[in-house]
Length: 75
Image (cartoon, rainbow, N blue to C red; front, side, top):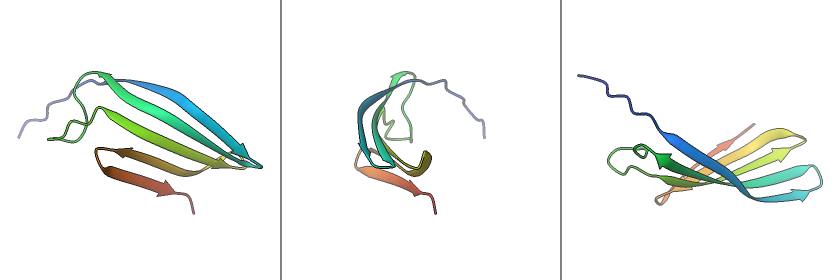
């Protein structure tokens, strides 16, 4: 088995920011601008990202694309 490495160039842009007391929610656009996408055989090239911070610490991170969603929650 041979590993093939591909380089990927991405562009991340903050599209919105909401603040409520000590909570800040950032909406982020994540796009592959050069190279293959992610997750064979789908090759996703764009994701919606939401990061929520409580008291300046990352509380949740959500990434969604192609009907799939991954959510990480700090406990």
